[in-house]
Length: 155
Image (cartoon, rainbow, N blue to C red):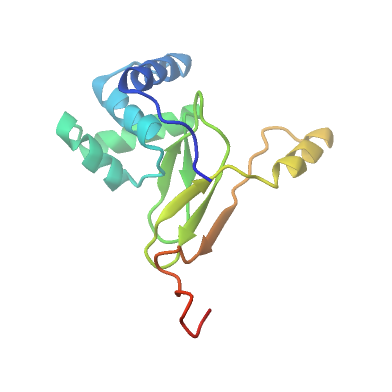
């Protein structure tokens, strides 16, 4: 169920530099700081969560917004909206794999999983002549920690 593989710090930095170069974006210190968090930590993250993680690198919240806007425009990051208010962003560049999420409706824990039933539908749509197809599929429920235990009357 876990998404992606863990990369070492040097590998994350190298991937970030390649992504920025491919997107024709300068590898500034703030862009690298934000992108390295997205690559190494497997979000999705809200803008505020990203800001807290890069705060030590003297990157302000406005800069985080600007970085994410340019990353989103170039396809390096994707937007995740779970209908609970804040929009989240996650890395979708080199080495990332297509996946979905399950969100606990009580504690808001977000877990990624790699299995996708919708890929077959996308292939059919491509045969019909559609291009640039994407989809968003999220699941909601109670995680094991928040759900009723085996002995409760609800189970």
